[in-house]
Amino acid sequence: MIISRLETFCNEYVGFVRLTTDDGQQGWGQLSTYNSDITAQVFHRQIAPWALGRSTDELEQLVRVIPEREHKFPGTYMNRALAGLDTAVWDWRGKQQGKAVTELLGGTPGPLRAYASSMRRDITPEHEVERFVRLRDEFGFDAFKFRIGSECGHDQDEWPGRTEAIVASVRAHLGDEVSLLVDANSCFSPERAIEVGQLLQQYGIEHFEEPCPYWRQEQTKQVTDALSLDVTGGEQDCDLSTWKRMIDDRVVNIVQPDVLYLGGMLRTLKVARWAAQAGLACTPHCANLSLVTLFTMHLLRAIPNAGRYLEFSIEGPDYYPWQEGLFTHSPYDIRNGQAMVTDAPGWGVEIHPEWLAKSQYQHSEIAS
Ligand SMILES: [Mg+2]
Image (cartoon, rainbow, N blue to C red; front, side, top):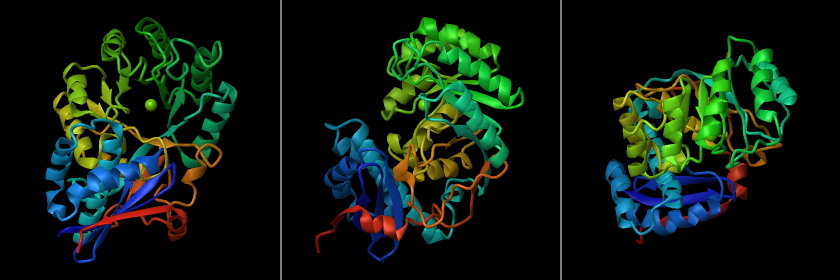
């Protein structure tokens, strides 16, 4: 079917794409979060003109060709916008065939173990432990990620001693049975990262995310080679040749593409495939409860090298006020520490009409 209309509904934080084909059928996708209003401009200017008038069967070609047609504009905004087209076509295809997207990708609906992912550094170790214990008791989480160091911090901690204190405290209070993960968000030099990594290993932390500035792959590789725990990363990387190098050089032990930063499902599947060929697991980045986590759920149920768990943000309205009211029914119901991919067609989610009514609207369509 021919793509005849592409609409965006957005605010500054989040934006959705509605794709309509010439037979009137529709699919919903999402632009990446943050500055989504800017991404929507890029979508209508640089993505939609190449997609309108083309068939939904041509997505694979479009995702390859659009970055070539727009090759003077490499980088994040193009990919954030391209992801809106890609994810809308997948929903459209699922609805046509009466299948969940994961099934179209060769997967099956079903459960996924989730890890409770904290986004906060302004939180004391005591307060973080309290949250984790509450979440464990209420939702059955048995895996938790917390922040260490400071963001792009040049070896500085958020406050002196916080990293050492939170590592010891979370392990002591949650016990040895739970999986613990940490994220340094580009904080450390290789020397300091290795020192911190040795401490993490003593406490049985299994996942050390983004230890060094992420763009310094040679630094990250030094840390990966020196430590036995899994060094992980890649959330910001949206350039496929960067990904290829990162995987070929074994810069990290676990790859963490973000479906929406990277440009959609097809590009993420490509990275996951390269990782599988290199024997690396894929634990994607999905740090909020817009559709990015749902897209990741469908992906993880379909790839052979899915990591041990799904990232699941534990932040509420105080941290992510814009997440509220996006859907008619939330697709994020955690039971026994697990999220569930249903067999509903497409993504199996509906954007709330009241949210849409309040959003900024733009459309592009085939000139008639
Ligand atoms: Mg991270």
